Length: 386
Ligand code: HEC
Ligand code: HEC
Image 1: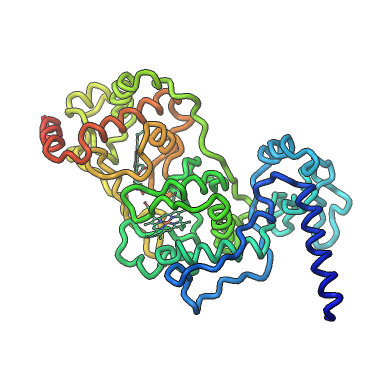
Image 2 (image 1 turned 30 degrees about the vertical axis):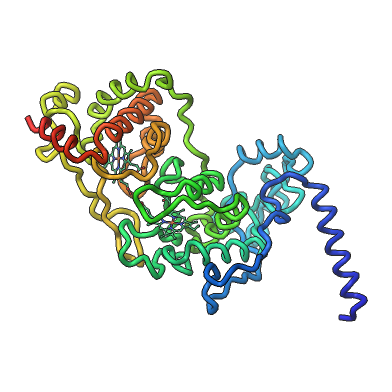
């Protein structure tokens, strides 16, 4: 390439960037906003032998119709609905000329596609090589020491960590407040990473928004074929909606109601019970298991590191530090969504939102009253064993 053509190519490229930037100004997933590579001081740099560059774009599952509807309201020039968004044809040309309606992204980042093998239509998102390289660079720098350079959950410091760092090859998540069984939306995953998980080595990450966005996009591409974000049947969901807190003005009333609901709904089958056996029998109709003041371990959870299934202890709220429990709202959202793979059921839909909020306040009150106060806690627990 001569110097002349090189210069004009650069000019063309930057012009292309310019028109794009003016056409789609504020969209947050715009590739223009991928974090630019910066020179880091030696102590924060990824190990030299680790390759962070990704040269090809990649495709992962995108959220469904609802998400596009919201986006189309915000960016009407970019997203439009078409009756002929995806063409259905199998290898022999059967169904040629048949179409399925769906959303079209003028920018081509999102597409609605027909999968011949699975006979299924789905939305997919293209993640650019540039964004992936940024995401991988940040991941290697900040996350890989625990989650592993390939994201398998077996980083250099993973061996002695309990709970073990998550393997991103599983695409299972516990605390994103998304109904168990769905994949978390970008927002839900971002919020989790910024929050961290209390009582574990997974700290709240003080990264810039764009950096977390890039990491999140990269993490999605760690799903193995036909799993997680590469699964044509996967559903991506937002944080579960349980409305406004009915006890916002009277948390004590919430906690009192929650004590009843907690024991009525059998939370003490896994977690401890926190009333006397007689009181529990009065509420639930049956006395609790003999060892009801101790949690009951879930032996083989759905969480694996290198094929080793991790056993998980349901927390005793008066003793253990829970992962996302700073507020009654955090707790209520976890209870509503359930903890997929850990055996904790989803409660949204099977009991009322009011009951869910009440338990959020109750669990929070147990933490406030006894957590970190061993003598007070021991005295309280002693009163429970009839
Ligand atoms: C010091 C070790 C450590 C580092 C560094 C670390 N994590 Fe974690 N991470 C963990 C552990 C341990 C867990 C599992 C916690 C659990 O299961 O309760 C976890 C869990 C997660 C989860 C799963 C949450 C869920 O709801 O299931 C995500 C997502 C995550 N980490 C992302 C990241 C990202 C992104 C980074 C880098 C910015 C990072 N982690 C850095 C230790 C770490
Ligand atoms: C079948 C067993 C089971 C039942 C029933 C159950 N849980 Fe859990 N729960 C678990 C397990 C296991 C964990 C720990 C997950 C982990 O840390 O990986 C957990 C964790 C929690 C947490 C802590 C979340 C965090 O941020 O660390 C809360 C709060 C909770 N459960 C509330 C409840 C309430 C309220 C009920 C009743 C409505 C309930 N659970 C019923 C198994 C159960």
